[in-house]
Amino acid sequence: MDQEPNTAQHYIECDTESCRNFSEFYCNTCHQRICPQCKQRHLEQNKGHDIALYEKRKRKLPLEKCNIHPTEDIDVYCDDCQDPVCFLCFFFNHSDHDKSDLETIYNDILQQCRKEITEILKKDIPEAKNNVGSIEEKRENVKKEFAKLRVSMHERADELKMAVDSVLTDNNKKLDEIENSVLNDMVKQQKETEDYIEYLEKMIADYETRVSSITHTELMKFHLDIALATMNMPNKSKSKLPTFTLGTLNEQEIAKQFGEIELDLSERFKLSSVTKVSEKTIRRAGTSHLSFLPPNKFWVSESRGNINQYDTEGNILHKISTIVLDFQGNHTVTTEGELLYTDYSKNTVCRVTSDKSLNKLIQTGSWKPGAIYSSPINGHILVGMEGNYRETKITRYNRNGRKLQDLRLKVKGKTLYQGVNYITYYNLHQINYITENINGDICTSDSSSGIVVVVTRTGENRFTYFGQKPQYRIWPRGICTDVLGHILVCNGYQTFDENYSSVHLLDINGQFLSFLLTPRQCPSLPRALCIDDQHNLWVGGSKSSTVSVYKYLQETKQ
Figure 1 (tube, helix red, strand yellow):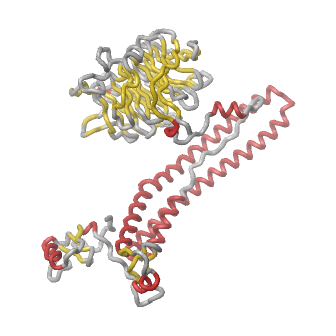
Figure 2 (cartoon, one colour):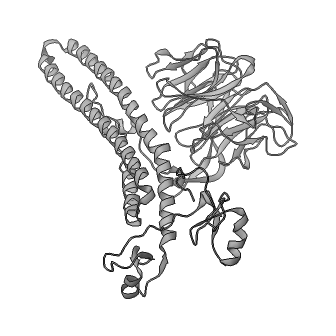
């Protein structure tokens, strides 16, 4: 059991008469300090006593008199009523109830309090402090967004000239009121969060000063206070901003384009047999990477070519001229429908907005950006990078391009991202493709080494997948995950065993489940994978001028 540090004395002496040795042990039954030499004799003289290491000792139950029977100590715990009582109270009022040792209950609750305080110090307070900083940053962003709205409204006012002057005045007044209200709410939220932090810190400070003499009644009340306090953290709510919309509003169409909130999609789907549902024609043979853009568009990296946007009829809608490394997941689509892609030659992550405007979102310094993924969970951007001497890392950014985290992954002193070819280790690693699973795991493929590496969101190694059978090398390229947490990875290795040109299906823990697509079903030398908004699998190959779409999940009846 976790105990308070004993700072009263440096050397803790044995309680055995005439013994002054260091007491390494403690008898929880008679609450006596015991040295190693006296331990065996104590057990022989006191059969059944509970002896523990001194640092894991139980605290002696503090004396507390019964209010009804002032001469009696409260030393019994009624399990049925969940109340501490004295012996007489139990005998007269609770005799048909179950009872427990109050000292054991007291120590169990004390241990729970220490764990919960540790959780508050490690998680709740840092999270609340982080929320304060986030609110301050958002206030500035809110002001910028309101400024953009005013520009849009003034442009519209110029078009409508004098007829809209009165409307413009009214709208500006309304916008001022909304802005003041939103900013005031954010100031209030910040103050509530800061007060919450102060309250938690004061509660812990009060506990620390009183813990050595706290009674079980006070302890139980304090335990309840902790539970209530941690349940009442101020919400980190998002401010709702107004919009300026031209024309007639069609609420159903807006709701359809915006999307819908769904909880626990895994309850709605299960694996089923694989069926090809369609094929999409592209301009030239060779697909390195795919990103689906709802509702009916997709982006394609063509082998050693540029990035093109297609509709489902095979028409090119937009072209991006850039240097595309062969067989790399160098683009991704955000939840806002924007394309992000990495420019390896300029150490840049670029953004293409829905209106096709292009801007530089991230400069990566001396690191060469490669594979990229935009998380639909939180909008974070994961970028696989290569530095000098073939070093590699994964960097996490927020949706605005602010750096959040560097993952320099280590396992037992060795860089995790080192090429592995069978049993041989090389300092040649590429993070060819990267994605995120529903549990926050980061999944990467490394075709040069023939491995799939999966780590936690903090960079700890979860597992490494070498292929379905040791004798068959996997050459992993495109990788994606689905609503059930499956990991799908294509193997484009050009051999003629049962493993080549296939899509492997793994569970969330890296266990091989099946060949989702066998060589007979799969495009030749598959390179690119993605999942669309209907949970279908899209597959493109390095020698094919079509992208194949497969249904493999079946929606269950609710």
